Image 1 (cartoon, rainbow over the protein chains, first blue to last red):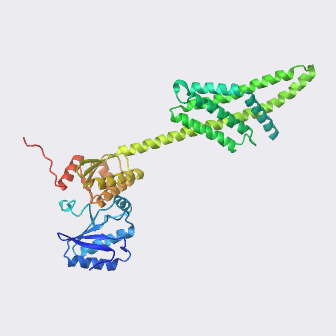
Image 2: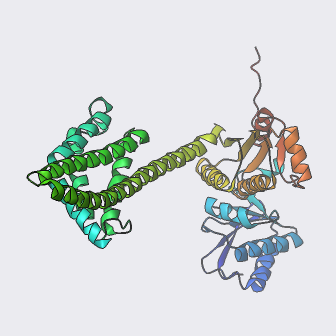
Image 3: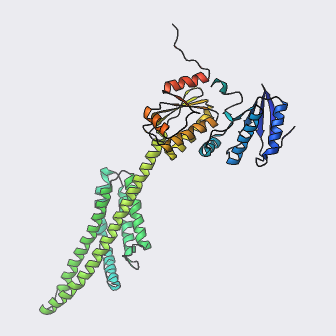
Length: 117
Length: 314
């Protein structure tokens, strides 16, 4: 099943890669959330990697969408990790966020092993 | 008053025009003494050009509608000329005292020229007049001269006071520029980000973290993380002597930004007084890894990256 505005690709080891396109409408989250969760369940995924490489800035609306998606993933026992966050986006986000995000962050899909912590 | 002004202006203009050689000669001589020669602040040509330009601007001011009006374009031009000249000399290492002395000398040179002119004309007027007529005329002339002289001195002191202010303004602007440049340099050198191992960055923080410094450090650090693909950043606070809510807030912001990039932030070197201050400020560091020393922080970063550093077995 395809979800408009994003690509979901299985990348092995129970992980899925989500690549948002510029057409992604974060104002219409309900339909997207259902579609993504359904796809994750179909593929028996344990981790969702969200690729932020194309986003130079993450505004509050987009940040809410990321947190909402992380919570939805959590309800179906999938961990969400945002990868490739740009320095400009991290800089701006760190200045206005008040709580730690509900998703994990990583540099690469197969990079820093967070299980070691 | 306006009549007096016209009279004194035309008299000064006349004086400047007839004695241009003497006055510029004296000004150039003093200029060479203060700024030329071994002082190497201005070349001989620059001093000559400067004297002539000053002269032209002073005549233009005297020819203006009201020479005492410090808001006139002519006055502004003279002021700007002095401001630029002062800046030029200060940038080359000149002293503000010498500039002020030079201004005083120019004022004195003009007064002396005026004095000589006055003596000359009094002698000329006194010749060939009979007794009582001479005394009466002299009385009238001295009254007129006094009023005129007063206006001239007022003009000169007002103008040169303003020019001294222009010198001080240039001096302050140059000092401010130097301070800003030094601050910027200090900011850059005070927070060196070093890649101490592949993928491990260290950031020793010394002094106070204010908003502008935090932004600079954060920007540099995040770009470095992206550039080096760093997995861990060890921030050492040994050099931070005290902390307040603003500083701790900036510190948390930095840690969050590093974590958002997917790297790990490890805080080290937190002094007991800083720990106490953080506790009383209700700062939650539960999501932040802390270690006592920089060396412990590095060991933790290596452990997480699966790197083992051990002594060589002999």
